[in-house]
Amino acid sequence: MSPTRTPLVLLANAHEWSARSLESILGPAGYAVIRAHTGEHALERARAMQPDVIVLDVALPEGGGLAVCRALRASRHVSVSTPIFLTTTEPIPRRQLFDALRAGACDLWAPPVDAEEVLLRLETHLRAKLDADRAREDSLVDAETGLYNARGLTRRARELAGQAARHNAALACVVLAPALSSADRIAGHAAREPAFEAVISQLTVALRSAGRGSDAIGRLGRIEFAVLAPDTDASGARRLGERLARAVEADVARRAGGAPPLKLRAGYYAVGDVRDAPLDPDELLARATSALRAPPGDLP
Image (cartoon, rainbow, N blue to C red; front, side, top):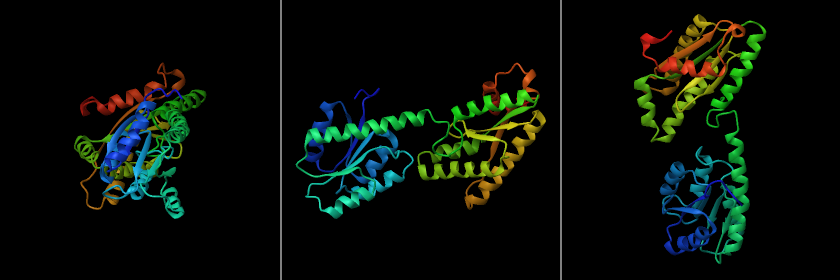
């Protein structure tokens, strides 16, 4: 196996001798190992480091290996293709093995551990994981929101520009993001992932409901969303941006249950006739983003 980077293993085990035994197998085989000693620590390190392989002890303090495995499988930071293995120091009853598999583990290991078997199993699962990672990197969809990602938006901009050119039609791009105070609020939530995810989820749902059927909606960055709007000129783009911002703010306020209001800013760029425009369709996104970031007095 020749991965493009050193595979990273998160090894969560409170028993030093057991952890050292596994690390002595993984290190010489080319794996980088990071350690965790409790369930909470394992969850924190998985969020921060996004390891390629996770090995959890069943008797892990603060949660236990099974509960931590289930939490990791439910986390957006751990892909479904990330192999998770559980370890135990006792013989494995059939029921315990089934419990581990139901929790999302690939296998449950007990001593004596066969080093060659461990490495062969890891290699097989890691190949599948890295292959899935490459597929996600080439995807056109943002995994968290289900909307287009930046690559997908660029592809759709070219497709919509081609359609508009055939009909001498207009095409606009509107980019929305939280205003400064709201952006600070979201940045503060980033350290508390469930709260941050709730805000992004609310924005996603609100944009889906407020957008038109012909619009292509996607996520450009951490908190920036874009709408590609066919048959929309500059005045229409401005109205669309204002309408989307109002609709999203109202929808988020309705769902937030007393949380501080979310205010949005919008920037746009539009071409009245794509066939006659010297603008490359990829620049629609860039110019709309520049308009979003410009001082209010500089907006077109």
